[in-house]
Amino acid sequence: MTLEIGPGVLGLLGPNGAGKSTLMRILATITRATEGGVTWNGTDIAQKPDELRQVLGYLPQDFGIYPNLTGQEFLEYMAAIKGMDAKTARRRIEELLIVVNLVDAAKRPLRGYSGGMKQRVGIAQALLNDPQLLIVDEPTVGLDPAERVRFRNLLSDLAGERIIILSTHIVSDVEATATEIVIINKGCQVQRATPGKLLALLDGRVWQWVVPEEELARLKQASLVSGTVRRADGIQVRIVSETAPAAEAHPVAPNLEDVYLSLVSQDGGGR
Figure 1 (cartoon, rainbow, N blue to C red):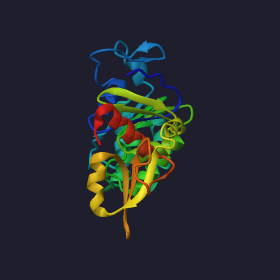
Figure 2 (figure 1 turned 45 degrees about the vertical axis):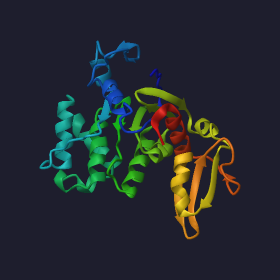
Figure 3 (figure 1 turned 45 degrees about the horizontal axis):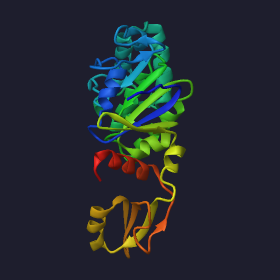
Figure 4 (figure 1 turned 60 degrees about the vertical axis):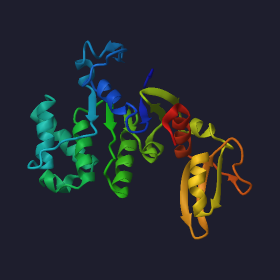
């Protein structure tokens, strides 16, 4: 894995167990790399972690809260941990409650927050120090579809001169937010490109047609099935193949789900 990262949203996409969270913990100076190294503006973060920690915002996959604290109190507590003075913290918290749309819920205990609201508190605590590097690890797991869309929109709004690393196994999250995508499998980088270049990899290689339901199991054994939709007349299947897999199959435009499954399958990730 060799990466040089600049401003924008970098999507780190891979199956469960691929090594995404381990890499995020190394980048966040929580885990020390056993081999290799990471530098921030030329500084080795293993030797001088505070160089990065001062400008880092981190939302881990397992983000814990204190259920009896209100949202406001929790953010004040986190600001104190980060060493912010009280006046600066109050001003920043007021700004962030607006950004994450939690002004009306700020005085309510966190135990009454929905999953999406807790994630928004999580992103607010990660932004307290106005970080240059924001790392979010599997941020939409467990969120309902509407909350997932709101969270993705928030990440897009936060980009600009900031570096955001979004680690996930949910293709639609990366598709909606990332300016560049790194696909990782078994601890190794499989591909890195913009979404457009990734889609170009499968031009003319994605096929779609309707098959009887009893044919689906055979197709999954013989081909890389990247999508299925039940219809009244059978199962509409999408298959990644160099040539037409059936006489009735017609080519369709690839999507990132097709690309991801194809690359991970080629890398030995299975179907």
